Image (cartoon, rainbow, N blue to C red; front, side, top):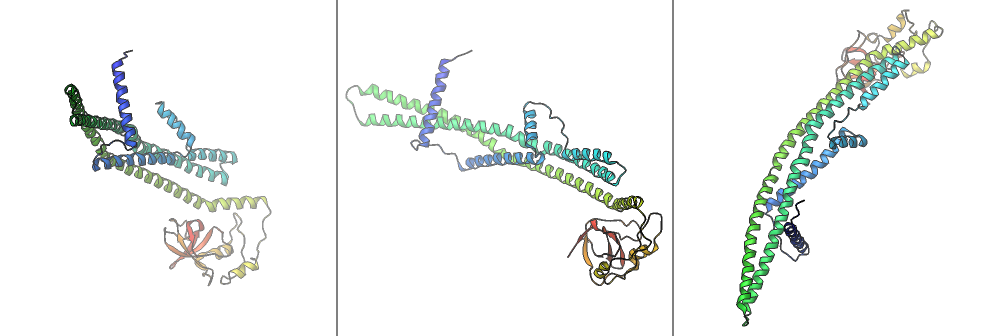
Length: 400
């Protein structure tokens, strides 16, 4: 081990001098070299960039991974320079549970079929989330991290060096000031007992202080220029972060567009199969019980609530047996709307009519809707101009 006593003593002296200068400045007993206004603005801008970058980085990490334990695990893997193990997303886990439940309940049952459809959509949502997290990490989080761990550390190091150079400069100024004051005092008070050697020593001390001041001033100016160039590079950092922000927004837009499309497809699947599912449920109930009577009259209450619709006997539909009476009642083209009880509705999604009794819909259009006795509660009669037909309730927003 190379142990240099002189270097150790010199470093200790420099540290002590800087500590004294810093303490005297805090106590208001020493002068401090002030940086120009432009340099101070650059320092404030750099500090603000660092602080907001840290906050944006941390909150984006929370957005992408809400689980704090998982974030800590990923941080440890990153510090150990090891690959983060693949983690199942919440959507993919939910899809797995739904698929297993469907197999347990029976994939041929209405509930099982619906679980499989929803589970497949959740799996696609989980895969889209995984792609979004991966894209955001590479295109947005990594550049922010690189700035904090690279450029900002370099700027902080050079700022500390500049601070030390300034303390050395101010300490040299204080020593020169003291030497000049001592020399002036000695010259003002003549001493007839061997004053000449003493004055020569004071003059040499002042000259040495001036030489040291010139050296420290040169070092300070050089370090100030280096630090200034690094601080002016913050503008380039902003441009780079702006580009990364655009890429993050694009990734997030694509992610939410995929999710919307997946859910829209799922809703169409569920809407088209809803009638089939409930019909299958009714068939199962009809087979397990005795057949209903040949004809029945609707309750008097229903007739009172819809006075404008004529009271026609309704015959329940039995599988395999045609029911012309019920079909004539529920045929939208052969009934008139009630004088009261109609409502306006806004269409939420596009809908394609399955047959001539249904009304095709376009998203965001306004239609008039009402109900008829004996109709499935999940359907309404919709009117748009001269067109009329059955429409699914799930595709509408009923207005007051």
